[in-house]
Length: 256
Image (tube, rainbow, N blue to C red; front, top):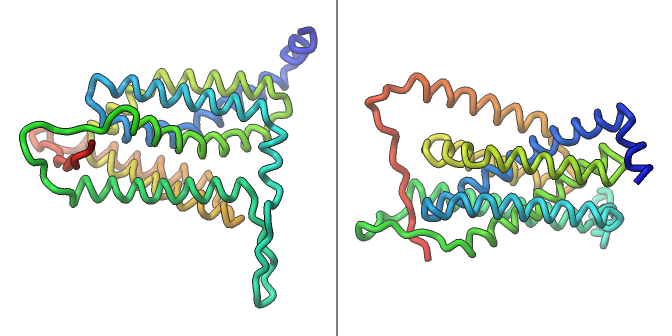
């Protein structure tokens, strides 16, 4: 306990905590966007519950992973090596590569399917709109939470040495995201063009995950700048759009 108070008596500890909290919030934006889109398939009275469960699961996953840091670091070690021809350097496949590749493919497939169903899907048959069930939505959220949690934890390990600081930063960042998740979710689901833009972001993130799985590197600053710039342009479009011109209605495909 004395070591804990001694650690937080140092100014550099608070700087590390604030920096890591900010990074966790930024990295969590992708998760919030995905949760907002998937939760939008539920009845309105269940959407808030799905967002809360999704973010709480993300918090649990990240704390569990932080408590197994040695295992996380071990995921960077090659599980097997692929011998490449023509003088190319051999490619070592790690556990992290497999998780990122699978997560990237999932985001690409899910986002593309969502765009297709919204623009090209069949018209509804009957007056009642049908929804996903909560269990199906939670499973999808869990799958993406796992991928984003690994990305978040690997970033934390690179920035901070003390697990206690990482856990506190994750808890604070999740509290911030939970407080704003409804506002973000309602905004994304209430504006069809923003929803299409969010799905395009998820495709871009999926591509980035696949590139990283093949040991490539796309600076995240480029990704977040593109997202911020595109969102800024769309905010101007929404502001300048005539109030008497209703937004286009996206189709809602039928689900179990």
